[in-house]
Amino acid sequence: MSLTETNQQYYQGAQEFISAAGTNQKFTTTFNTNLVFGDWSTSSANYGLNNFKVYTSGDGSPGSWTQYTSEFSVENNTIEIVGNLSQGTYIAVQLTTLDGGNYATTLDQQALGSATEDNYGSYEYIKLSDAIDNFMVGYVGDGKLIQTAKKSDVLFFAKRSLQEFSYDTLKSIKSMELTIPKSLSVVIPQDYVNYVRMSWIDQLGVKRPIYPVNALTISPYETPIQDGKGVPTQDSYGENIEGTSITEERWRTANTNIINADLVNNLDEWAYWANAYGEYGNWNNGRIYGLDPQYSQVNGWFNMNEREGKISFSSNLVDRLIVLAHDNDTKVPKLAEEALYASILHYIISTRANQPEYLVQRLKKDRRAKLRNAKIRLSNIKLDEIVQVMRGKSKWIKH
Image (cartoon, rainbow, N blue to C red; front, side, top):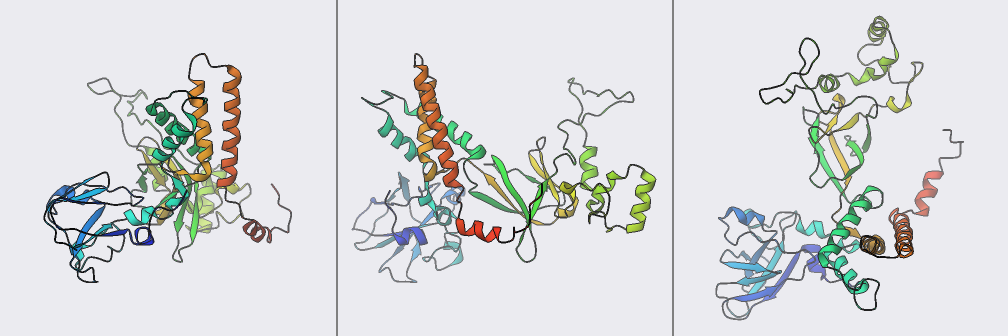
């Protein structure tokens, strides 16, 4: 596939035109990014939905541009200027960018946003709509395995395939920088599928891995209030009355420096060791017999709180800057494009009546083989990186 954007479009998120004289002139943009249009009026609340701004200039020289605030409309990435334009007027369409673009002369005119940066690296991926169009051309029609197929069916199976791929094939393409609040919980991202890794960032900008709690604690899904006999109580509608989680409260206020104290069965012994070593004692330095290696770390823990739809963290991570890397299913890497086609083909044939079983099984094996190839390609293994890591592995690795 050839490149479709100019360097100005890709790097600056800008495209320029020169107008003829007259009204209702149209200018079609050719960005990889579709124009999002809310309203032309800067006084409208919907204007903030736009992912672009329009500027005009008499000669196109730096510093001569002004934001266009008169009426215009957008349809299929084509901007129609309703007002009158003079012959030779320069028109610039600027996608929102982190630095506001090169056309604004005042802060309020800057096209602030991230549409330009979101497009960086887009050549690595193929749009789902393009993948569906390619499938319709290459796999559906006379003389092909699929004679007829509705585009809506192909879209359904394409999304279903992407959902399957996101579990263990597609690499993470999104990370989010957050600060852990006093509540020690952050809301799960809207497009979250599964976490890849969790890290907090130290003063040097170095990642410190945060580990899942595993069997260390839990976030109860239901927390009914009980009466004196231990029976859950109900409200006037017959539903259990829910209270706050005591487990979560204890975990939220726990001193993680003594997290391995549960190895000491007697509470009096626990108090003795806590008094001997102090609040920041040597609980996690390996001196306690029976230390569990999965808990002998100081970076903290996290767990998925399914009841609240949040990610919860241990008490030593409050106010820490964290980076959450997670999977989503909105982009198709070109390295997995062939696997996507094989998956759609298998799903369509396997759900149709009177299809020979040998054909279904053949397509299933083909899907599995191409998915395996996609995993290998997306693993992005570099020989130099393996050599660099293995230079420090001259000793026997025990497990």
